[in-house]
Image 1 (cartoon, one colour):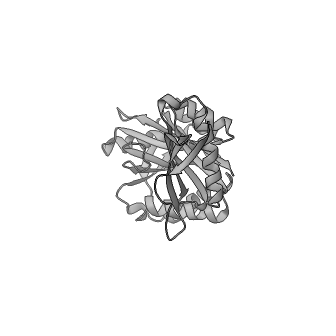
Image 2 (image 1 turned 90 degrees about the vertical axis):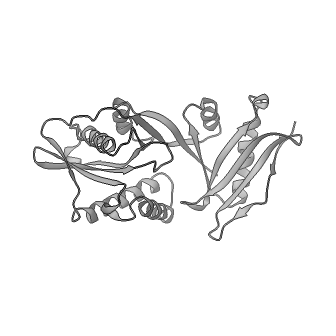
Image 3 (image 1 turned 30 degrees about the horizontal axis):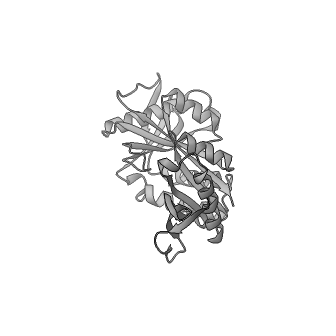
Length: 277
């Protein structure tokens, strides 16, 4: 049995070098599934993505997906990609196992929580809006931290900076005046302890009503429960805006954050993985 990829249409290439193509996965020329590949619009042409890999039910558990995934990597190498990324729904256990067997590393997770009743903040804790004068220094700190987090996970400075530019432009087009944005500061016993960035609407394709983009507690005040309070503020703001669910992303190496989100009844929905080519 020979498993091959057969393009369903010519390769699509944009002016900025982005590529995309869909293939039939074939066994002895018989179609048994579909594969979709692209480069990453935010990281550039050197980063590839397996957007979709579906094998028809009668041909599953025969190694077809493994061969197709390896063939996909060869295609992406031919495109000049040095890394490939995939996103797997948490319920797709077989796909997660296959990714591990093929040497993919988990980069992060999406998590979601259903919202019902507005929570109450701990005594002496209060939420307030971030001021216009506080915003520039907050933005510089957030952008630097966001860029650094991607560099630490294998991206170049240029790629990480480009992603930061794209994401902050997309999600904060008018700064603190962006209608869909809530920038809140937590004060406790009269002093600022941290801040949170909440986006209202389905900003990350998770079918949620709100999304937490950033939670930051001042280093000297960590370990005192203020991160939990900030997330309760996010729930308050989201419910007040009519949202009934809230999502967020967490990097896989941020064990304390994952523990906090789990304790607040967030559930995992998608896992993001990568592999060097």
